[in-house]
Amino acid sequence: GEVADCKAYDALIGLPERAPDALLADKGYDADAIRADLAKRQIEPVIPGRSNRRVKIEHDRTLYKQRNRIERMFGHLKINRAIATRYDQLANSFLGMVHLATARYWLKFVHAA
Image (cartoon, rainbow, N blue to C red; front, side, top):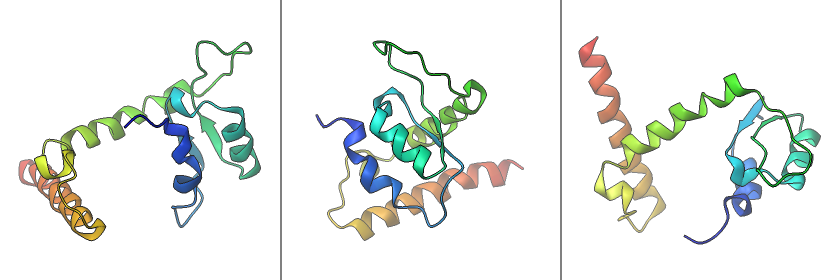
């Protein structure tokens, strides 16, 4: 909805079982507090700086291009109406639909090979 992306950072950073080497994120996550937390956790921030930032921050452009794969995967998943509209009320039902859609998308590549 209307909430900024960086508000969800605290909930999302604690999810993985193993700490990632880098965090690929868009300009919505460009905040000094997030960058400081990533430095404390020894995670490389691959976040382009906002255009209104006074001091320009460099990021790994080659690694940032990999973020496009993630965005395309979400685009393919949202083709399914139940996922795009979050029709399921329970988290387990929604996750089941995501698993089915992912398997269906994956089968296209297995069958082609």
